[in-house]
Image 1 (tube, rainbow, N blue to C red):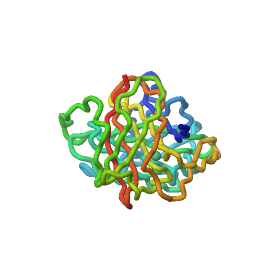
Image 2: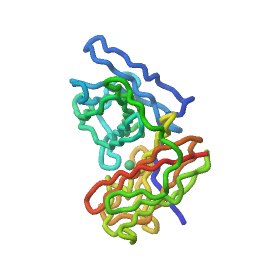
Image 3: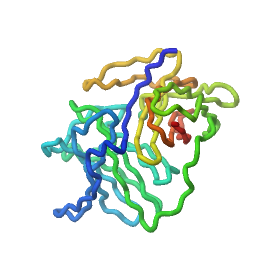
Image 4: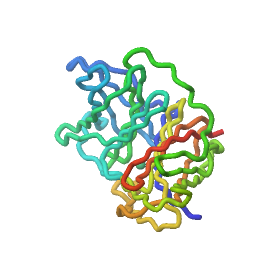
Length: 289
Ligand SMILES: [Cu+2]
């Protein structure tokens, strides 16, 4: 079976620490800025990404990201990818929560902002995934600090069951253990009431979205499973990236995703899909060994 899964890979592979994540106090404003850790496997950082939190109360604040060309000019033009110019993934330090949000954008300053309320005693990892026009996809990771001592949390553990329940749906992966460093196609099947689900629709321009995060290295992979046996309309984007158009029609329930070669480790995986008008986020744990 032929599959052309659109693939977006980002990673924070240990040896590829190209940009320091050190927090830098901005003398001018008193705010604490972070320079993002470049996180795109196989790519190179072509911009600089800055992160800070404005008007923080104890737990609520506005996450801000502003990106710059390497000669220091704020980036104002972004390509739309999956219906948005920035995708922000926010995961809790124990990988127990996952958010996929789309920050607002100030076209004058190039600043993105996103309201966020964290839970006490946890830090969060924030991934900013965008495609500056003419540059191509760039992904940076930041850390949102904890308020209060970090809670002790259960370890992520081994590979999860292949089935997971989401509302009235059961999502099944063909496997949750993979050979490390080897690309592999994984089937994703969504069943409702014992039958293939009939009320799935495209979500953000894809049949489903899958985000993998290595629980140790924080390497990040973002894939879009393709509906099996359905002709997908693909077009080359301006930057050479592939954009997918599904026209908002029916989607699933039989999908396949092309998982790239993953370094050995444990990966938290979240699959997002739209079922009968509701977005579901389904967690799994994968082991690459
Ligand atoms: Cu996606």
